[in-house]
Image (cartoon, rainbow, N blue to C red; front, side):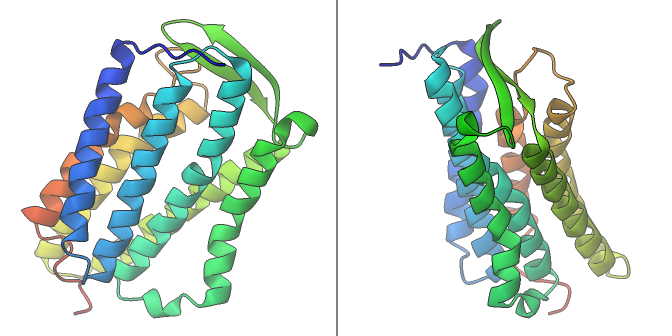
Length: 237
């Protein structure tokens, strides 16, 4: 049975989890808005990512870490898909999403989970799993073609999200520009460190700092939903 040990590196994760929980409550209270509903699921997914990652860096057991990283795969894959839903809902274009298009949007998340959970039996997702002891025990691996394609798909969805929001607000009143600015800054706070991690640029080898910064993103979104009223109106209203 795997042993779990918690370190000071868990403290920012706990703070991020608390902020995300507050964000979930705030957006759920505004669930009459389709944008708020998507925001709610985004915050829940990010919270799940933090919980799984907290357990990951708390154990040095290889099998447990491989299972946890497989469990995290569909969460990570669903977030950019929800980002596209968020952008389309904010732009008033959510009617464009048919069942077939939703299936296409979220199918890679299911495929990534299947590939990740069986990755020790095939060479198409990740290979050469090993644990390295540094500030915290981290799982290292070599990404294979399936993982690389899934990563490319995720960042492509992020680009789609940014383009949709930008096109929506570029000719809108300054009020909506400020609201979009809150969304872009909140996105960048979490996305940039994660992109650097995917590129192999981290302060600690194998350690992803992005989940520890989710709380900052949550604070920005929380300010936007409660103070800036990001979710109250959409530019097409």
